[in-house]
Length: 75
Image (cartoon, rainbow, N blue to C red):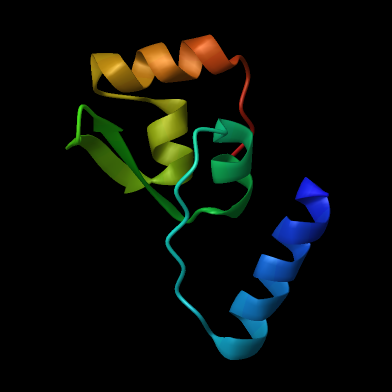
């Protein structure tokens, strides 16, 4: 079901040239669909940037902790 929803979102984004905000704790989904990412801790943005760059070299300790807890993520 998740794959179907993600394909639908991607199709709508392309067809209608939409910008979307996706809120998720699933870093695999974020890595698959997000161009840019914001990492929040306790309601504050602690890191932001291009998803592939943030996932490859996280700067904030909380981002590193999230990525380590989720296992390998493919941006």
